[in-house]
Length: 290
Ligand code: NAD
Picture 1 (cartoon, rainbow, N blue to C red):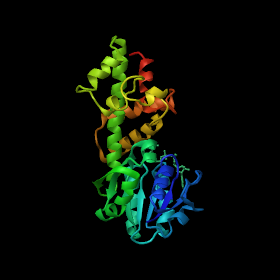
Picture 2 (picture 1 turned 135 degrees about the vertical axis):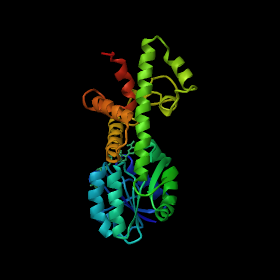
Picture 3 (picture 1 turned 90 degrees about the vertical axis):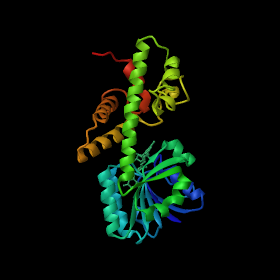
C-alpha cells in the first residue's frame, strides 16, 4: 500500500519504520522529528497525505489532530482511509470521522496499548472504531504494527475503550502503591505481599506484570529508578480524557476522578514529572495520613 504517516515521535517513528520494513511505501511528515529509515520525507502534512491509500496520524492531542485533519482531508483520495492512532478525546475522534465521511474518506480511530517497546517490536494492541469496510482495509497494517486489533464499534469507540482501560489502570496502580506503602508500615515484607496478592483476589496487571516495588516481581520501571516506561504525565493525560468523557455523558466515575486528581498533584506539584507512573509508590511512602 501507499501510506502517509504524520507524527513521527516516540511511537510514530517505529510504527512507520515497521510498515516500511514490510514493503509498504511510506511517506512521512513531522514538524520536528526526523523520518526513520525507509520512510521518505514530505515537506508538509498535505504532501504526505496526497494520493495515499492510507494516512496514519500519531499526534499529541485532539486539537492537533483536528488541525492536521483539516489540512489533509481535502487532499486525500475518495475511498482512502485516515487512521488515527493517537490517544485523543472521543469528541475530536468523532468530529474528524464526520468530516472525513463528508469528503468520501473512510476514518478509523485506533489508539494503542503497548508503549514504545510495543511500537518497536510490532506488538501493539489496537482498539479500533469505525466501519467494517475501514477495518478490513487496515487489518493487514494492524498485523504488522501489532499483535492484536479489536474492532470496538463505530467511530470514537476505540478512544472510548482506551480511556476506560487506562482509567482502570490508573486506579489499580494507585491502589497497589498505597497498599504497598501501608504494608511497609505494618511490617509486611514486600516479597511476601507480592506472593500473596499476585495469586489472590487483589491481583491486577499493576501488581503482577508491572509491580511498582523495586526488586519484586518481574522486571519493571521500578527496577530502573522509575524511568518511564509509561510516564506519569501520559497517565494524567489519559485520566483527564476519561473525566472529560465522563462529564460529556454524565457518567459517575468517582475513582477515576480521584486518580486524575492524585496524578495531577504528582505531576504538577510534586516530583512526578518525567517519572514512570508507578513512582506513586515512593510518593506514598513519603507521606503520612494527615
Ligand atoms: P511524541 O511527542 O513523541 O510524538 C508526537 C509527534 O507529533 C512529535 O514528533 C511532534 O513533533 C509531532 N507533531 C506535533 N504536532 C504536529 C503537527 N501539527 N504536524 C506534524 N507533526 C506534529 O508522542 P508519542 O509518545 O509518540 O505519542 C503519540 C500519541 O500516542 C499520543 O497521543 C500518546 O498519548 C499516544 N500514546 C503514547 C504512548 C507512549 O508510551 N509514548 C503509549 C500509548 C499511546
